[in-house]
Image (cartoon, rainbow over all chains, first blue to last red):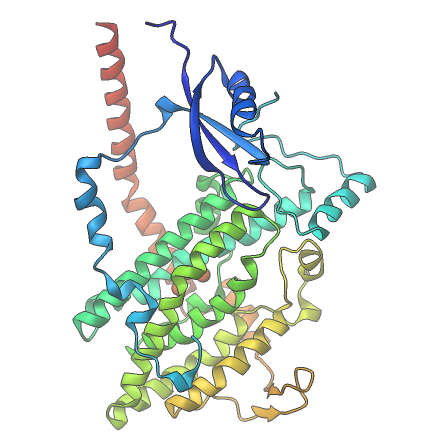
Length: 94
Length: 333
Ligand SMILES: [Fe+2]
Ligand SMILES: [Fe+2]
Ligand SMILES: [Fe+2]
């Protein structure tokens, strides 16, 4: 069991100036091999200009069963959006 | 493949002519600079100072408005103000995180704010004695901030630019909710309209000061423009702000407290714009140097919040340690 090769999550920056985006995972013995494997697997067709690898066990996710209580409160707060406020057209863009 | 950590990489660079020219060429090609890229020490320092100040401004900026949450005149206004102040807290977080990618720690930045070593926007050292001030802050102060922040979305430093895109998206309701408050007051009783006018009288000049000293007196400006940290000069942004804002005051039936304000059709390359009176720079520097009406209260409040929160931070760390110890013990059994 303890001899399993660790799992890594791979994040790629598609273009200069953009954030890294999760694109998949892979197994590798350490971060050097993980970066190498990520380059060979995920950037063969110009998909990116920079790679981050993160041990999968370092990532903690929210509980899908709690999605409703976590995220629904953000849906009905219309006053967090600019369109909620009445600004007459004559005032112009604001 | 060579790997490096994201935070705490050694940022020291040997600043040869060749290195600086190569860096400038990247900037000129509109490339974004990222945390692990080689960068001149001055570039790093300028950004740490600017992003740090910006972050502190968001956090200190919560105080003058937070002061009115419990006294907002309706549920609608209270929900809006609460949401706005909550946003500002988030803006502080995005910005602190962007600064941390440059190798400065959150603790360092907090310490520098509380000790008075780090500055924040002078605007937040003015008091908010009336409800109209909440309207005026949204309209003028957030309006000036937006004017400043939109070009920062194209700043050459990637993490700062991306934080600004997020901030600007959230910021757009702040100005509108403020202006809506003023519309209500101006459609109300004579007394309410007066309250709005009095508020503009107090906030107009300090809002213009938010853009910083005149270009000629702004010491870091030129280098910042060359590095594309800044895209427009202080005076250019201030002029844009005045030209956008004066008609909005007119719509409210209010005036800005500048007897020298005058439409000049020749300005802005023939597009027209407003000439305005001289800003009281003595007042600006007084406030920047700590002698505004509210400087002491603001830092006192931030210090109290930090000190009062100490036991929570300690307890959370102790709890985390205990859980980790329990898990290791569990794994060993
Ligand atoms: Fe903000
Ligand atoms: Fe804001
Ligand atoms: Fe801001």
